[in-house]
Length: 170
Image (cartoon, rainbow, N blue to C red; front, side):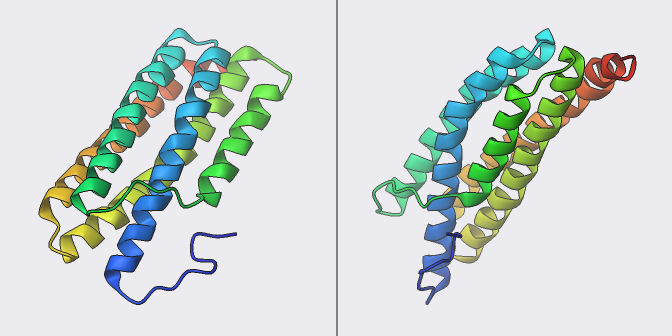
């Protein structure tokens, strides 16, 4: 099932709510996946980055709940098949045998795919909120979007500064 399977989209409001429900599911799934990533990471910077992003993700879940409240809606999850797939790929990395540094590099790649998905999804939701004159909701979504971009940049720094360097020597 995809995000739009069986849905009736008659207004931009319908689309916006669906996007928020999808993001809510995605973030809830990440709160379960990030501790596993942190535990599996060998590089200390990477471990700390995953732990830090877990705390941030928990705040993002709360922010989405605030958005639902501002919209007069009860928080509801629409299954995010994209995030399910991205997390599944990350779980495959955790189960793989091999060199610790190479596995850390693979985890960074998996985590960055998640970040890029979230950047796209939050950017879309923010733009829809702006169009719907939901300025406070748009501001909250922008706050999360900025955090996702920063997380992606941090992962790039860890990859380029240490993990990929170590993995290349294997």
